Image 1 (spheres, rainbow, N blue to C red):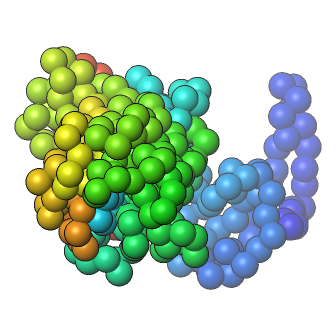
Image 2 (image 1 turned 180 degrees about the vertical axis):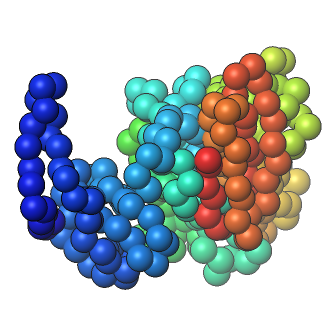
Length: 372
């Protein structure tokens, strides 16, 4: 790509190249630079920014910019619970480089970033369960190259769940973690989660008698939702995972995660709802913000997923043609305390520190950040 012109090139006694005249890098505007077909090691002079820049194989960076690692926790929004004998909503997908990651996968590596370069952050909202026609899945969360899928909606007797994906309503919907199944003439199945993000939802009860119906629990990042064991008892939501990228006291201050003793859980599945004549127990939400399913009083909403956990909502009771919303997701970054973060418009965040590190806790919105 580059052309070197000089009157004289020689070597000194250290085998280094010596150039008598100034080295002139090829000049490009930012627009022209981005249109190049570049390979790692290419260098230019950016006339838009008045800076020499190099291509690292992924992006253009300022010459001499610092490159360092950033640890992360990225959790998508949890799903709404199913309507009418509703299955529990699946938790948002979870990926992390600290503590534990989702879906039974191996802990991921920190992300290498370039100082001063902009990176996208999106915090996924929970799935909206205001009516039987709502799309129940949660929304995706993003940090740069790390993205997680919203949780899958819980199945319902006549609406919700996989109906939003072109399937049968009684089945849970796929997502970061899968939604639980309900019942409509036969058992609805729990949906699959996403590899290295979350696990599957549980199945609904296999038969019905006099409105005795029980639904499966939504999947969590750390455990699958459980099947409804019989007509009278619904399945529990799957547990989330422990990720102590921030401490339990910092999580409490920032109102993120679910603190259990000294641990912080994220991405728990919602519990399954049940029919009005069932005599047992509704499903409980998994640690990590999962909502409880509706009990046997019938026309009741399940519990909502907890905000900023990625928890799925609990399933609604019989004849309830709406459901509660899933919990919003969370993005947390941890980086060396010798650097400072700049947070762009559109993002809501707060800061915390620990020895040698700073943490930025993003709780809503979408925008860009840079660290330098």
